[in-house]
Image 1 (cartoon, rainbow, N blue to C red):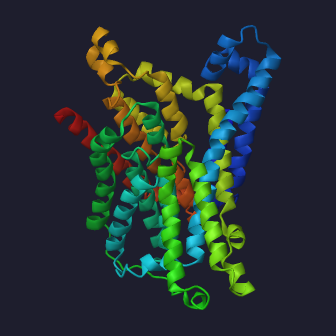
Image 2: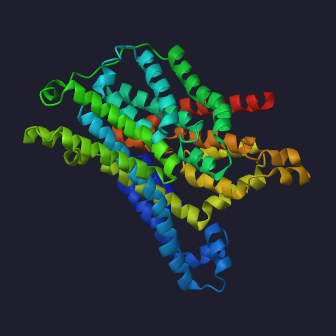
Image 3: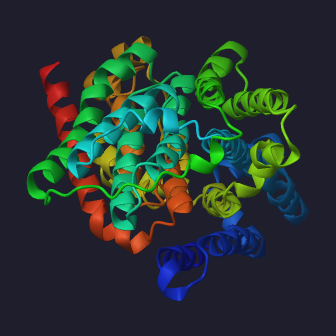
Length: 463
């Protein structure tokens, strides 16, 4: 299973040289890792590394080979598929909403306000905007919005890719300090490991440094240049799309995206349902707005037509890679990894730094889930009764371990472009090359990641 995953990962990294779409590779490894799991089923499960299987046999003693097949084929696959589907539908809804705004040229309302032609200045504007938007929306949605906005501001591919790389860094940094900014912080927030106020107060400064340091490096050491702005492509649209409609669709679309965390808080339902609700509302509004227009105009602006422009290969890539990681999680590879870190490393700062670095290779969701399963939330009674209360204090609610885990898992994924949902989305939308990102952005991401970690450590020593 590991060999299949690594080979697939290499093929994804070398997408452009081998000229095979990464979505195809992801779908293959997303299936073949589960096939390998089923072929080696008794040997794998009998080793006892799968926590899901261990929990199952506790309540179902005396199980046999047929029960193993049923457990993996029906329970595990469907369970992980359900988790993956929540991300897929969230992504589909967000991409469609952004595409609707884009097709109505709502982003022109924003791009018309940005007059700078300086490359460095634009990087600062886009990065800071992304950083704070990500905390309110989430890193995935923010990346989709900002990449769509970037297309209207920059036409040169190299410049566009570079700014998109910084959008990934800023989106992941912004998501790390907000309880609703990233899937992993949402998990820790819902699980009770962190609270809203403390995660903001303790992780904001490290997250800010993780994007500020790369921006300062670019400002002082990169050559100054002007951006290449695209030609105005709105002229042919003005005859059937008014300024009021553009502004209205932009405000409603962004409002639908902002409504998602509110929906989740009020209903306790998964975020993707709030996203689909917002898409449905926006769909109805656009149908009403364009009802009296000529057929050709309605066709260009209808959601049914816009759906054809949504980047489906990116969605399929998500499906494949997440299911591949899910197979490693189900079989026990990630549990084994987390236990090894606990036994061989021990230091909570080093463990979290390693988890963050690993999250650039393996999806951070199962890594954080593994860490949450590996350690219980320490209660005050447990701390007072412990022989080493100082160590146990790291694991109380809002303890250093959980807060630093939120930072590392959130920002570590920026090191590689396929290490985070934001990176995968940007890669799919702008067709960014894996090797190009590795050469141009990864070293900046590493410096930012370690800078923020150092700030968190200093902050912990002082406070």
